[in-house]
Length: 342
Image 1 (cartoon, rainbow, N blue to C red):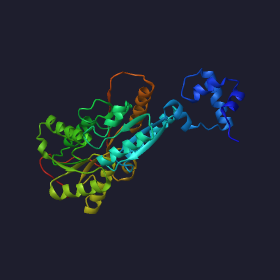
Image 2 (tube, rainbow, N blue to C red):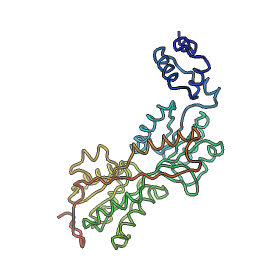
Image 3 (cartoon, rainbow, N blue to C red):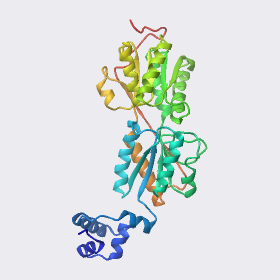
Image 4 (tube, one colour):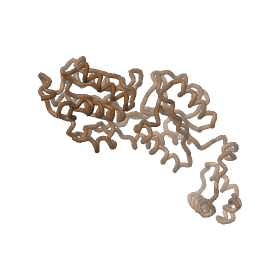
């Protein structure tokens, strides 16, 4: 027979009101909290989440909408965020919108129908129409990795301008002038920020930003593969590439292998995210390491502040720094001409 609140009361010696307050998310004395939690574990007590939600108006869940579940950047952040929210008694519902604004709107409506207490969104479009129902309802809404122009919301971002500026400068300092950049979709905030950083590096070096060659991918392996092939075939003098996410970096490496170009000798490369690829590829890949766990922690912390009514009253945008991890995939070349293939 399943344990009840009365069983917890009998085991702890506490009143039903105190136990009910704790189970419904209220604050109780630390010693009482410890007694209740010990009893819950010993009795294998299961909270009736549906009943609690109907009583409190809270589901103790946070909804998350991301472009692609196959994207390791997003899922790594969510994994860290979920661990921290679970420690605070909150579950996470994740929806993949396939980088489609229409599906993104459907996902947000789906999560609202499940009475989520807050929403974290990595937006795929530039408008606020999909988030408007949640904002009108007064739900706490956080943006992950991307901003929506004109919308004043809490957000946690990587400083993409600085990351791309530092990466491009690293290539320029080693003599590369014909540099290919594989960016994400043109309309996505992070893509524009990274291109801005690339252009800054050229200007700071006294060079014309038109010297870089740009291809727009879709943050997938196939997108990186196709963009890398197109750049190499269109610009035979190109000596280096900056690839701006993990999946596209993997695709670009596959393209180099297929074209018979040796990484780090005939084509230098800087990729994004220090995951398995940088450890497997030879020579070791130079990568931009984004602070994924820090992003997850920052998003979880800000969401809890909003859910509890704590923290600063106005929305804030938090920028986290990425780190360039040197590798042997970037070599020095003559700054006056291409020597690829020698």
